[in-house]
Length: 239
Image (cartoon, rainbow, N blue to C red; front, side, top):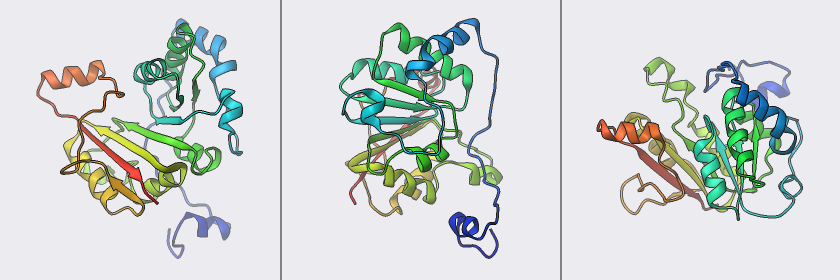
């Protein structure tokens, strides 16, 4: 970034700084079912990207706690959570179009009215569309660990990102992360423990037991049978 201390300074000076992406855009091929799901349910459950703040009460037609998930994959867990807790509203962001189609298809079959989905870069959505202090919980489950040392800068959990998340959480809201890479779990804990305005909810150490609201995925179950661990971290916004 050279002479500029941060992205905001560079933009104010009219200088473009290329951003390091924390994900790889994977278009994939839509199945017939996913295509039909997007056609049928996007008008009511899909949200288009716009450089304007959302009004969640208008979006869902009610006022309820909002849970946002970044990178929901094929959406199985997100749909299950929305179905199990209809008193909350769920908002998912995913860059993989087939995953968005699959998620909307499952949600539509269940008749869910408390789920909305976007296909876009989550950081841009957080910055430009999510009102400050509006989220009860932000979920980041099994993000790309970028396990090679030279790729660690691509990990989404970095000091600037966690402060962006903090600004979107209500005071008392939770930032819930989960990973099956121990080294990334340790990285998450290191970043979060140094982050201003957060409190680790673990009774001891850095990690918490999987809360009941987070479903166990088939991938996770398979990994557990092979002896792979999963680490959950939940930090509360306190200021």
